[in-house]
Amino acid sequence: MRSSDALNMMSDSEIKKVLGYLRPLFPKSINAYYFIDNLVKWKKKIPEMDIAVLTPKGGLKSGAVFFYFITNNQMIFSAYAWCKEGFQAIKNSLLQTKRFAWADYKYIKMPYLTEEMYSALEPVISKIFSAGPPPIISIGVGYWLPANEVIKFNVKVPEEMRLDKLEKEHAEKINCNWLLRNENSEKLIEMMMRVNFGRGLFKSNGELVAWAFYWYYGALGVVHTVENERRQGYGKIVVQAVCKEMGLLGLDVHLNIAEENTVSEAFFKDLGFRHANNYIFVFSPLTSE
Image (cartoon, rainbow, N blue to C red; front, side, top):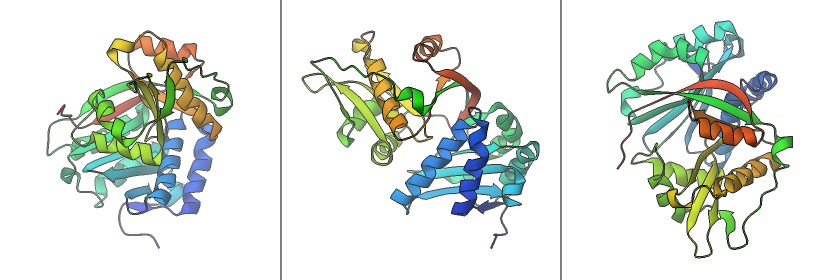
């Protein structure tokens, strides 16, 4: 039975149908597809976590989907519409829903909004952030590479180094080097180590010098090489390692690059990645503590 709220929980069978709608729309829909796919897997691993996939009234006929998770006082969500009517439906449902007390969340992140979805949700964004400082708006360029191509990566690790799983004891260093960190982001990194995975490149003395993750929205993310170890190909090693591992799981790989980051764009193009879509990221102002 449907609730009286403007946003309704979806059944497992309905979620499968949504994924069936989104898959033929690749690469434009790749972010929504894998974000939802990730959330479904997480819910099985940590059923107590507040994770959901919802639709406006009308269910699948509304032409839109809304999906989120909440952790450590952060709400992270996105939305996607596969028909013209869906944009209006998702906007209206988010303006009318009583499910969320937006002001209760210290941090709100809205990753991977298509340009069309961002335009539709501008009134919603104003409502969500009405009680605090205006959000930060970031424009990104999405790239992707299918699973059958990333599995061909030849990962070459220098003899004096090792490529290994990232563990909880590495979270503090990774968080300190993450530009989007806040006081709760280290816990998010630890969570990714449990429900997804990260790979790091270590020197013979155990020093972690580069890393990358299969990140929360189902993409390659948080790629970093420590400053004094750059230009030695270490970033390429961890990127190829994580991408290949994702590909072996049957996952196409996508990622987001900040607009005008031409160095990163050239790097991923050299690896064979192709343009998928342009995206808007909306998030609360961050702290650096």
